[in-house]
Image (tube, rainbow, N blue to C red):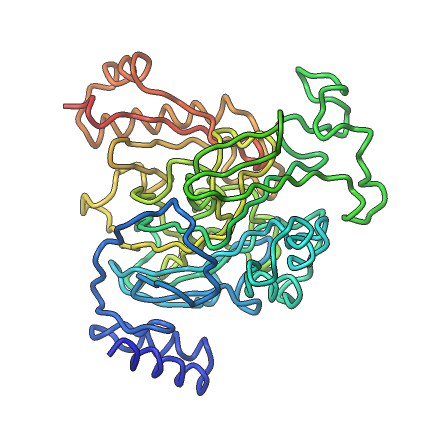
Length: 446
């Protein structure tokens, strides 16, 4: 039956096109959910098994697909450098509580400063054509939805949006990451001039360091050429070895564990109808989530985001194979992932989501509650405030509100507890709007 279902889906897709197939899938309603390349019951079981091990190249739509609906990264449907606004047309539709499997594409290896030719780029590092993803090649060569400006646009390939039935402004979308599987045996870690924690500014060295301490070194800065391949940016390739990654060689060799997660998960937030409006740029996170870059949000985590559009319009991007808190050089170990997500609508007063989440992103894992603070989640238009003190204060206030209003703690006791026992961690310092997140152990409370 599975083979017959796959053939039927392929036949329908050839006849009515990809978007028509997705619309047909949504129209099935309370019956069976029709996925690209598979037919599954509407109620999917939680995904189990390894999420951190590379098991082979996952070309688009091939291999195991666990979600009720499958969504690939097609050049005419993804956004490159921008996130969907509340006016965006969905590329898939699901019911609340269903799952979607998304083949996300990393921007690293396809960007303009790397030649915008992933086959040639990864060949230089010893990888064959079959180890380069077809969707990455197609996007690099065929993306035309928006004009590309390397110096202005975000770098991320953004897949979606997914319309979740029943979601309305004022609700919360509960995003459970069930799976994050590496699609390729490599990732890329990049440092670019004028970006990152040690970046030169228009006024010279940033406060606290000298020009000699800027990274990449100022003498290699070629941005004045206007030619991205001559900017002098630095990209380091990391190879995947089972559940680990390796960078460098000899005395410069380092090995670290894979911890795959999606740096970008969010819902439509911008009200602007222009797809390349500043507030739709993919770099800064917002109250709709987006480029939140919290390394704890891998498989087994739950991310809650306030809804601003009918259908929520969920999207993903920025797939990471590993990231250190802070993401100091600019990027994490960027690498394409196959993710499966359960998307559930939470209504006000239902108790299905933390109360904080109706106005601000919030997260949790099996062991932790994770209040989040951003320095300037609405500042994309008028310039970003990248002050970690502001992000820290907001994370602490959100933690206090959660402990008081959801768990019933006295606010003064909660404040004392946070100081004595909770950790507050720098999420990232490189996304214009910087972030801090708290780690509250569930075992401590009650």
